[in-house]
Image (tube, rainbow, N blue to C red; front, side, top):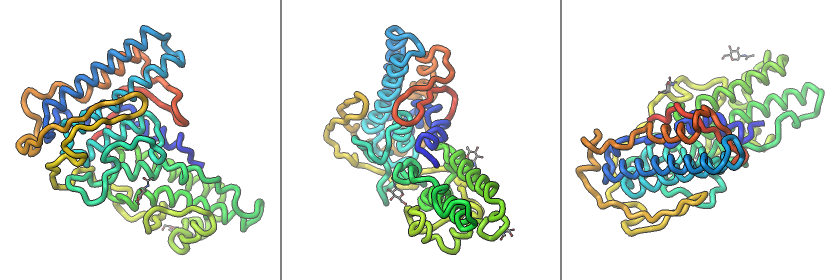
Length: 355
Ligand SMILES: *[C@@H]1O[C@H](CO)[C@@H](O)[C@H](O)[C@H]1NC(C)=O
Ligand SMILES: *[C@@H]1O[C@H](CO)[C@@H](O)[C@H](O)[C@H]1NC(C)=O
Ligand SMILES: *[C@@H]1O[C@H](CO)[C@@H](O)[C@H](O)[C@H]1NC(C)=O
């Protein structure tokens, strides 16, 4: 059974390691690049101050300390989203903004499917200009959807101890892995999703099938052992094993076409957003746990928006700022585990969420 916690850990490895890494150092192409970099710099320095306050108040390693640091981190991630909405709203459909939203969701371990306060423009709606080549929010939503991930184990299907029971259990395993992977491949089969940890998720799913083949070695020797149910009768997955997919196509993990999982780097499709999608007026954004901010979208600036390299003198907040702040807050603890939500929140320094 693939619980969300297991899934999260795979994703955390890359996502949370990256902490609040600035995915667009210099604010390249933002309507207000200097506003963007100074917003990130302020966010990072507030995070450092917050971490120091935790250290002064609680003893390190205590639950209170961990909760305190978790609160600082969550606020940091939320603040960064606010930076984008204010100064880089013209890129809210980009891979980098979607990645920033993902840092917050994965970092706080909030369940995307039941989120009370949605993150503006996440996941990217269909057909918008300048969108990420892969809808990362939909991918993440599918692989962390508890209504999909928490279904009962296949071991319980079929009459126990019989050949029929064994083949049904094996078929069910194929359906289960096929379901989880198809839900992603139906969104973007060709993108390299290692930046959100999908390569690890994929490896785990492949291993599940290999394990099933080992447990059911008699079946593995037959055609069924190639998960042919997914090629010949995938509807059975939904009708018999209650494992439906999102989208229409079933992908057989043992017979994937070349280029799947994808190898294409994520990129933004052409197109520009020239009017704040949220409206040009001021609005208030509230995000868990205690982040409230008033967003005033910066005026549109065609020259800034067209930039493809960082403007001189604006690169004050770099990708390492957040990580440096974390190091300080952790005071030498390379890895610290917290206890929010069902999953495991891991704080560590050094990974990259890269586009
Ligand atoms: C799963 O992917 C489908 C597209 O295939 C999308 O419509 C749906 O919203 C996604 N589900 C979640 C929970 O994100
Ligand atoms: C399973 O698939 C492999 C690779 O396509 C093939 O060589 C093998 O013969 C298949 N096994 C059976 C029993 O059909
Ligand atoms: C995906 O991208 C990562 C990071 O750039 C790279 O290390 C990896 O080799 C790529 N994987 C594939 C299958 O292209």
